[in-house]
Image (cartoon, rainbow, N blue to C red; front, side):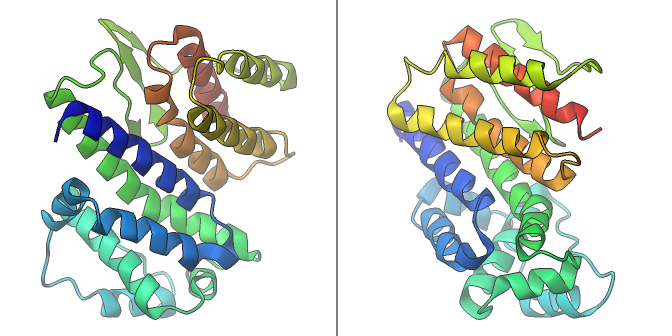
Length: 260
């Protein structure tokens, strides 16, 4: 595998992950199949998943406890590799055995709306696997000298971007308002012209989802965390466009203000 091939894998995984994080409750299994198929047919990702093989993990037993025993939650691990394997196994179990996942998610989280339960599961379970795979692929890329000027990662919803020897740290600004959000989005949109259409569309979708949630009187924290997960891969796309990267950073900081 060369660096060009790895970059394509990163792009494709970001795309299917973004779609999975935004999936509607009544399309969950359809999109989940695409997500699982992508992992199963990608040698480097599937090999990473298999590093955490834990034969003692009884996915059916674990699933039934989480769904039917009040207060029982998934406890994956202890290593990152085992965590990734176990989450993948749960997703595979859902795909193969659960006809309507949103009913089970409702039993686990108890939200009144089907979509809210899906988003809870995605932010608490799916997002962990996505982050672990992204971290692994990023490290492989670093070893291969891919995108040495920009490294992105998700750490508890916080995105730190290093460019050259400089590090941009997330900051707090309590004076945020609607005008600032509009300025940030304008700064992003105005710097998409040099991107491929599919990359620009991904960024537009991510910021639109963030905007829709942020303008609500009481934005849901789980949805904002999902927005951060969608925005994180955009820093790789923005590599070489400093103004775009800076405005994505500003948007990430703006969202964090409404989480913490």
